[in-house]
Length: 378
Image 1: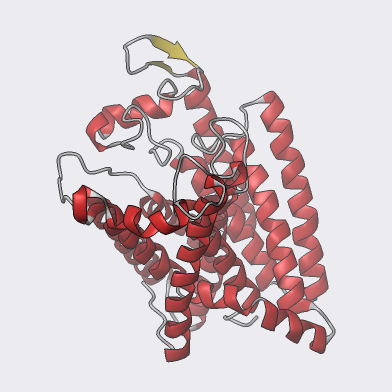
Image 2: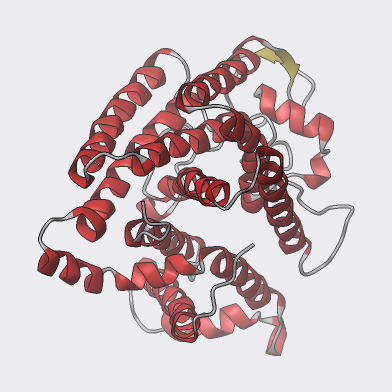
């Protein structure tokens, strides 16, 4: 198995490009519905993005651990190295949340990078000390624990009213746990009574990563490329079906709660999208056709080679655009957006063009780094 796959880089690039697009509209009041998260239950295109990152990290973990094991690393060394990387990612996420005020009394503790790091901390020993069957059992066990806590634990909401199994914003068991352990001042500022990257919902997020690990085992197997692609297609369809079953009979598909139905639904889509990239870039038997697809999808590969750096950079730039004030107290971001806003375009189209321009600026940076062979890794 090659340690560097165009399909995995393109899949990662698709995820980061999508994240840049949905995170940076010109005006949050004017955004096409698919480029917003589902308000609560259900999912949109935007809800693909984060679970795709978690799934990809599972696939990449399989490749990384196998490569380091071939290099002579024992299990304890593998664990230390993986945990070290996870802690660095958590630290970067916390630092990004501190910018620009560096107010430790109100800084949001959860976040996207924090969740990725926590998932890796939990998943690493499972993957290092267990085979495919053990990984699958742990994925199910973590979702079962989460479900029992969410549906059976009697908890008070932010107003002090006690509930059990109530899956509403700020009223579920995960929200209570976050308020208890982290404090309302350190949760998502748009809510304060709950956080979409909270502690309890990290358990099924680990399951999302472990499902990515299982996909990585298929990648590492000696099967023919076409068989691997078909295995992901079949697994993806089965996972989508299971997500719908759990949506009807256990808990609804909900990104903010990261319910088991959401885990399987998003893992299903991830398998299908990854299978498509793998077939087009690494498995298609016609070399000329494969080369044409490689050229067409090369921008995604460029994005994928520095995905973590681009995520951090984009978050920093977005904060600066809203923090730096110019004449009359207007932010730098509002000043740059004004020509598009006043161009006569429909507000939703002007907002979308701003997001596309942001993606293109990030691509220019990614392209320069790619040409210079600057690949920043943790």
